[in-house]
Length: 415
RNA sequence: GUGGUUGUAGCUCAGUUGGUUAGAGCGCUGGUUUGUGGUACCGGAGGCCGGGGGUUCAAAUCCCCUCAGCCACCCCA
Image (tube, rainbow, N blue to C red):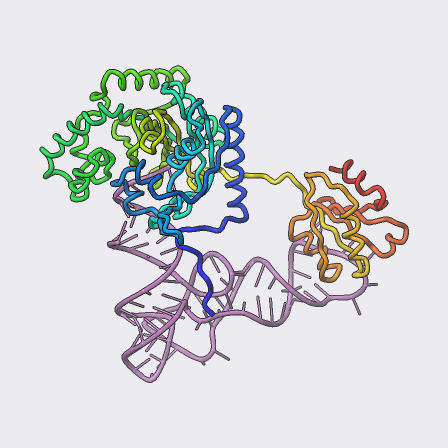
């Protein structure tokens, strides 16, 4: 019979991999809570418009990567491709708009792309959103949070922070015009793909990797020189703040985010090595987002990080400090007594109990050894008569007898 | 969506210019006499050679198609 297959670009998580995922999520939660961010979990299913109205129809995510379908009730639904727009929707839905809201989330996202290293169709993100008043200190705070988070994973030194400003909508439009004019004039020097992009989203030509484009881009107008007064001051404040906090960063005027809702701050933590999917954590400011979804005049700034991409950077040494103890008997008749002991004993968290119930005695020992047991409790027929069990330490190879009434006490003392 | 590359045992891989019954290491499993693991020795199971078609007396090997994985582009976390 033909075996069932897994969906392309999805992954079953188990073993070390899921431990890594949990480790990352735990560190993330700890840091977020220490910054007084509150957790939010939104549904994986959303109405299609949540994303079409916010990300922009020309964005790749909306135009070709969303998993959407019409359900039995004729609702046009999608598996969420990203977190920010969904959080913004939740803020509107639940009338969380009045206060300064500091939120964090984690969960799966879905994009129908061709899978490759660091890219899956179902991938997992952790992210934060600081929604409320417009203040560069908020931008600073979430970057500081990112710093602490990446540091807690021991990967901060493998990443560089790149930052840019897209300005407010006025200066963004002004820059778009200037860039458009420049590119139109030099259209013959552009690559074919960029020629197409020119009409849709010229900003994105800036981070094109085509050598042909890059030559031209070097000569292109500088976005940071087209910022109006408000945008310029905002960016300068942020940059000064980073310097005062001694956070290492690099201004990259070609850094643009692919989604429409971004303005002002844009930043990315990228890996130093020359790999393809090198963005580990990315974010920015999105002042028009909530309004575009029918909410109030609320500004926001946030970031998201890909768990799978963090895992690739992790030094992988999650040590398991709990000890495995195997329980078995010398004789089948005593197997139920093994379970009785376990029922009547309260074990510490640092102990992992593992019952072995098949094979010859020799096989039981071998099995315990194979799973890396620290030691074994053995119910032996003759010892059992005097209400005692055998404790064998596998690292020393030594054995001793323990009275069954004292097992709990024994473990408490031993571990 | 475009391109490159790889599919042989549970895992990592050999497999000659096409030629008997497709191999190794690791893992799994049984044994080396009584109630004791790690090391050693001797056995065993396990393969539609990714799938389909073609060439040939003969295909894991050559050709075509297809599927899957990995990688890169586009784009992104």
